[in-house]
Image (cartoon, rainbow, N blue to C red; front, top):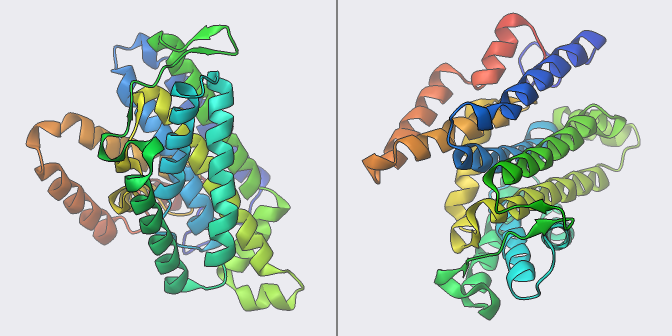
Length: 322
């Protein structure tokens, strides 16, 4: 099973069948959103954060590595993509590639440093690296400091699709989200993913079996950071700006919150968690700073009553893989 529960179920044909049905249902619901009257900006933003949370879940839920600095991948890709589009005049597809590549490079550099430690020390190193990048981006000329990069042009994807059209942009973001989601799904159901789960459960035993666990963890970290950067690159086209908000430590905390609310170590949990948190920010904005208090309350309630997360509890109750 791909969910972390007390009664772990091995990956079987039925488990894959359950997950494929859930994926088909999710895809169908997202496809009809533009025709339902739901605010598309909200859904596009939620899909970007859902992909970000899924990337983070790949690292912690299946690799057992807690990162407190995943926002640095989101923000780095956003800044590079925004700068590439506005200053360099690159096309949208090249801008996305540039931002994603920057996140991948950052993953290699920070991963080589962080992966040397385990547990809370790994988490603290990622936090420190994220804060270091925050202050670099605060002072770097190309980020425009606290003002950020504003008015980023959306352009034509592949010279054909006008991203200024909200409906076209929505389906491009949906395609990007589904692509990233399927990459993660394939990874956790591959031999590589099985080794990651073995390392998460018992690293000394994995080492005794001959696996070079540090290499597997580094690859998982780089892949997670790359996909988080891909989410950040897509988000630029939705918000049309890149700012320090995407790099600060509070964003990393929100990523953790989304994953835990939805269900740590589940396939669809981070998606649900992201939609819940973004919906709260969107529809409770009238409460001002009290939104943070409400989010904190929801988090406490989930930890106390739904310790497996929303999807984790559903999967456990029905004995299904979600």
